[in-house]
Structure formats: C-alpha cells, structure tokens
Image (tube, rainbow, N blue to C red; front, side, top):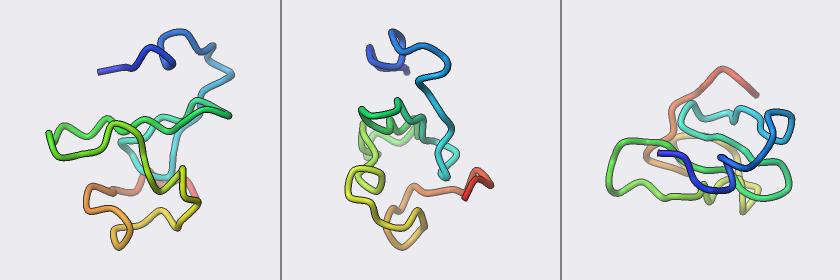
Length: 66
C-alpha cells in the first residue's frame, strides 16, 4: 500500500532503494512495502544511515541497487 507522500510525490522525487521493498521519497523517507504485518512502515536503515543488509533488517532483500 502506498503512503500519502508517495502518492503526492512526483516521479522524479522518488527512487528505488537497495532493498526491493523500499521506495524512497527524496528528502523525506523510505517507505517499506514488505507484506509482513511486522515490517516497519518507514525504513529505519535509510533514516539511520546504516548499511542496507540482512543484518540490519530481517525483511531486507536486495534490489540489486548499491
């Protein structure tokens, strides 16, 4: 499910995340679209600036973007 910020952000204001479930709204947040009810709504890895990997998020799955 998309969030309001994603719906209102222009295409050039959004970018793919290193995690296949993430959608970054530039300058705002990275939203997590994992289907698990335990997944966060916003990606804490993006917010905290940590490495995008399985060790930092149990729901992480690479999108192939570094």
